[in-house]
Amino acid sequence: CDQVLASASSLVPVSELPLDLLLHFLSSFPREFTDIN
Image (cartoon, rainbow, N blue to C red; front, side, top):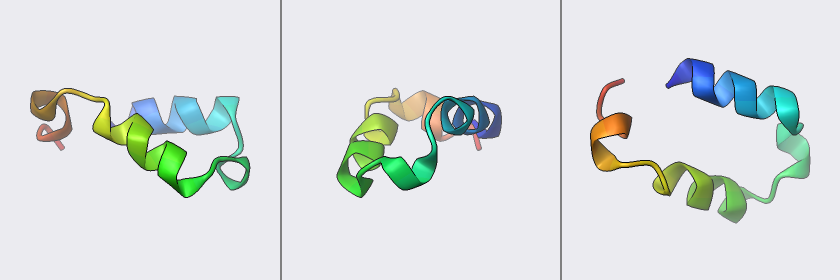
């Protein structure tokens, strides 16, 4: 999961992302995927 976040943050600076958009992006992942970490 850390690699996914790292690659996403390298594409778009986190400071330019609205918080709700970031949360929506994270919640779009399957529950099984987010439970691995």
